[in-house]
Structure formats: C-alpha cells, structure tokens
Image (cartoon, rainbow, N blue to C red; front, side, top):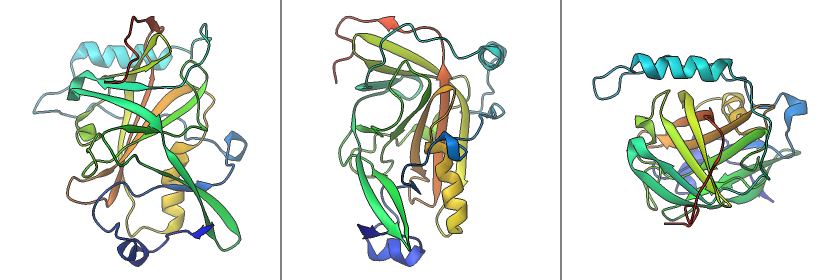
Length: 238
C-alpha cells in the first residue's frame, strides 16, 4: 500500500503538479452510515455565454427538486456510454482503476481517471437505475481531455448515460468549483464526500479545473429526469 499524497510538494514529486486529474481520497469502506454524500443544494443558474437560464429550465429544476426519486422498474445496469448534448460529448465509460493508499494507520481509496478518451466509473458506486450515487471521473487537460468542457454545464442541462438497452437521462442540479490544491487535508476530505453513497438516485461527475492547472475540483451533480428509454444499439461505445 503506497503512502497517500497530502502535501503540495508530494504532488510535484509525483509529476502531478499542474496536469491531469489528481485522484480524490476517501476513507476505505466509507458509506452512508458515516454521513454519506452531502444533501444536494441546487446552485443558482449561472450565465453561460452571456445568457441566463430560461424560465422553462428554471421551472424544470423546481419540478425535479419536488419530485421524489422514482421506484426502479428496470434491472440496474453498468454505465457504458455518456453523451452530453450541451458540450457535444459522446464517450465510452470504462471501470476506473482504484488504489489503496495509507496515511498513518488509515487506509484510503483513490480512483484514477482513464489515460485515454474515456470516462471512468467508480465501480463500487451505484449502477444505473438504482438508488445511490453513480460516480464518474475524467481528465480535463491531458489523455483525451474527455471532461475539458464540463465547466460549461449549468443547472438544467441534460446528461445521458447508457447501459444495457436503456438510455438514462439526468438533469444537472448542482455545479461546484471547490478549492483543492494547497488546502488542509480535512478540506480535501470534505470535497471527497461527494464520492460517497447517497440515499437518493444521482450521478456525480468529477474532474479538475482550470484548463491550465488542477488547483480546484469541478463537481457536477445531476438527478434523474424521466424514466429510462429503450434504445436499439444506443449503448454501443462510440
């Protein structure tokens, strides 16, 4: 078990000073009994390209907020593909690689982003179609830069995930940019709470920010928007 990177100098020595997705650390085996993922608090609409969110999109978010998580009517499946129309993203989803790291007597898990144009699924998080938190990561400035435009998303935008013969649609409800590099370890652990299980059905997309560095976490949270739709060949990786 390797030692956990905790200081800025550690990242520099590991060659992770400015480029790529720096893995987030969370206690091994952490679950909803230890607090779980934070409760979703919808962010206010942000201007995108000089435009504010339409009234229709704002109403959609309020409707989604008031709607309980639907009872699953499908067999949960692994995610294999993601599309985000707003940013023109169409990419495969593959299982991410998990490492166990040690800090003093505690063991933490860190998930590495794929070193190719692909999104990484934290395979011990929720499947599509079941209550819980489905966590996805990706690079923003190296190795395919699959999440390079993730910062453009705003509440109300749609994310589509595919698995089996189904397409699952989600509406963005929260976009956060959180300071990470150089912060206290406790702050970075608090950021990593967004990786934990949740009682509600949600997806969480994680990368770094800005494009020229990795000083912050960019976290996008979305909740189900409608019921899954059957597809014909739609789950095939691009």
